[in-house]
Image (cartoon, rainbow, N blue to C red; front, top):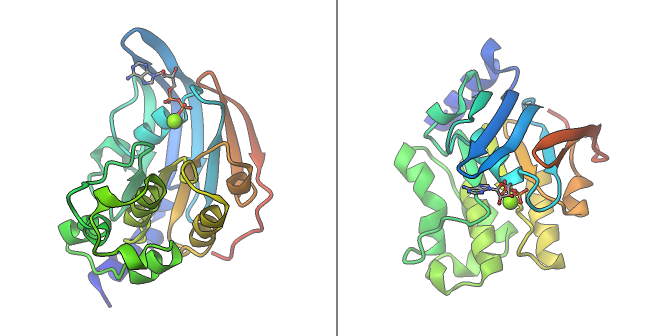
Length: 234
Ligand SMILES: Nc1ncnc2c1ncn2[C@@H]1O[C@H](COP(=O)(O)OP(=O)(O)O)[C@@H](O)[C@H]1O
Ligand SMILES: [Mg+2]
């Protein structure tokens, strides 16, 4: 059994990990812009796909960053797998697809996808994911030479390749044409049962495969509804 697989089993078996994400009373201010988030509560259970929907400016990216541990909330608490979110610094456990991608253009697509697992010394074969996202032929090409859509799928592959406990995906279809939206949806729905996903999006095609949808409006949760996605076996 690989180190990766052993660790995953531990994570799912632990009583502390019945909830992947617990955000309670989360408020966030930035200089000159108070209440970007205001009293937000959010729960993600193991293996769930939860969508955070809302208009541009509603606070989706800010919430993604706080859940992925990039920064700490001004008020309230964000806990991931029983630990404060900002304490996680291992993308093989808690991964982020940032809206602005954060790729290294001088590295190849494969190198960008592989660095979290290499850094953590974790085994993962990204080849099937690259193929599923139509990136196989670009594996050894410079990331900076690829299109914005290809770069976004590269950043998605980087997030999903380690089969993290939680993948936080900020607008993963934002730069994709219809055929590639289908590819993104296919890898999301085919992910392993150990990976919970939080997706910020207003793409109805992503919302359609969600287990649950949380709607943000001006930094506040206005609706939390069951998604129409078919229940996944866990
Ligand atoms: N660092 C920042 N400085 C100033 N304003 C910010 C900052 N971060 C977020 N905001 C503002 O907070 C609001 C929510 O932003 P964001 O979380 O990016 O929303 P969304 O992802 O839903 O479009 C926007 O009005 C944005 O301009
Ligand atoms: Mg955003």
